[in-house]
Image (cartoon, rainbow, N blue to C red):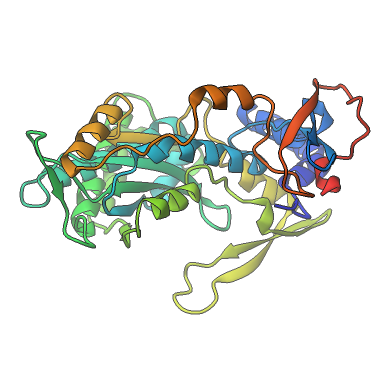
Length: 399
């Protein structure tokens, strides 16, 4: 894929220093680390290698990536590796996509208490699906799911929500049979929404009671327990937004769909339109438009654009992809093996010898030669701050 004309890194390199000076003391260490990583990504600052084609002799320099999970340029390879690891877990059943959101007013509390409230969002949504699915009146089965946290809307606003991918069925309580859901239907979204609302609000009360919530600005009065409970009361009567999307066509479609969510960042480089000293313009979707073209161009002041990008930097060590139920890490392998046995299907055969893969992986690159499609091999490695001995051009200029 050719390099986009504009990148987040370009904005950070040119306007980041002024933003950091103007907001000194108001930018977290995690946000500073993200800015630094994105600015250095795929530059001489991180070192790299020289790759050569054994077929046509083409050479180019490839600089190392920062591998930061918030970097737009690093998510393609990360998503691809994650998908390959997950491919063997796919089952030959229907899959469903469920989205859990919270009211905007409560999202304000989440912003100042990200680790605990985002964690609650994961737990409450997973417990909701597992509880309803286990009900004999619904599915009566033990289910599993993969959950992914997104914290943004298309306009880069703070909009935390969970994308959940769920196989359409589960194991019987005894674990002796596979109970499939009705074709094209998993669980009632209204039932899911109401249980999720109760579990999430009860969880917020528990977090407040144990002193795990902090309040600032015009929300500081919520530090009082009675005031907080009174403030939450109306949200117990409103309808919360939980919706399910149509089932997928099959396992391959599930992987393709997952890849669009698991390693997505707040905004991709491809959505950038223009940037200058005053404004950044980017494409966004206006979901308030029910029919017609939702695509629009938004222009934000450059400092505001940087601020909106940085509010989606997650706390250090916080996992934005989590697995629950039958797909939890501790039981996933055993669960998948049992389900495959019950469904009468076998695990896909490995297409190459492990020894051979181990032998060629360190030298042969995954991406083919941009000139002839031949194998590209690493012929020189250089470290941070070093310059390569080869005079080959950077990869972006060599194709």
